[in-house]
Amino acid sequence: MASPIVEFHNVVKRYQTGDVTVTAVDRVDLTVEEGEFAVILGASGAGKTTVLNLLGGMDAVTEGQILVAGQDITTLNDKDLTVFRRIGVGFVFQFYNLIANLTARENVEFAAARSPGRLDAAEVLAQVGLTDRLDHFPAQLSGGEQQRVAIARAVAKNPLLLLCDEPTGALDYETGRQVLELLTEVNRERGKTVVVITHNSALAAMADRVVKLRSGQVESVTLNPARRPVAELEW
Ligand SMILES: Nc1ncnc2c1ncn2[C@@H]1O[C@H](COP(=O)(O)OP(=O)(O)OP(=O)(O)O)[C@@H](O)[C@H]1O
Ligand SMILES: [Mg+2]
Image (cartoon, rainbow, N blue to C red; front, side, top):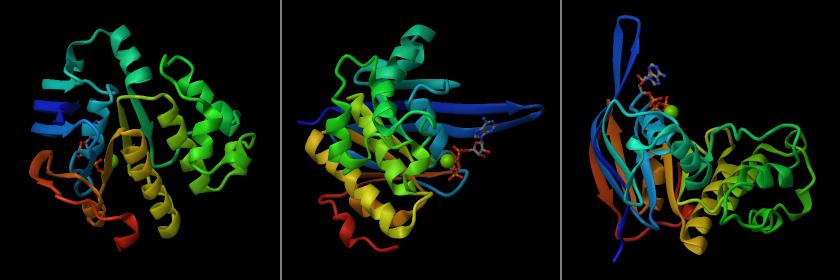
């Protein structure tokens, strides 16, 4: 039986800017099971990035608990939180965020360097189809190739979770589909739990679990009995 790898319990995140308080995440409860492909959907401003940043230990909750593999990350001290970010989670961002003066291989090696369970950089780059781009710098790669390096970088850490914030947001339609295919492959073949956030509701069908956010709250949770292949999705 699957067990939860992520649990949010009554999570609240408020930002205070001058006199204005924004409640970006408002009493969110959610669960992701180990090995699932989860999609978090919502309009701009719904709180998606905030949820992902809290889950990845990049931002601190105002209230509530976040359990990752049974451990409450909201109670970690700075040192342990750093270790969690470094080893526990792999991030994929909309604009790739590769290090410009490192090659594809070096970007992957650098990110994974302190992860005890790290995977071989060249092997992971081969899985994402970049065997002949190992020594290219980011500026010498297309957007889709850069995103594949970013996915390889996240995967090579061999983290508990792969967290992706609008991973296809900067890519054209076809390249975006290839990147989604790759994420499903990583999920299936390596059994990695993947969380993708997007405003594109067409991606709901490719997920095991769909969490819809609206104004910082969970509007609905849907479990798909079967995932649709990316090739069958249209948007
Ligand atoms: N650091 C911050 N300080 C103040 N307000 C913030 C901060 N980060 C986010 N917010 C506010 O919290 C709300 C949720 O933001 P968030 O970035 O999580 O939305 P999102 O769903 O990711 O939107 P998008 O699809 O546009 O990326 C927004 O109203 C935003 O203005
Ligand atoms: Mg966002």
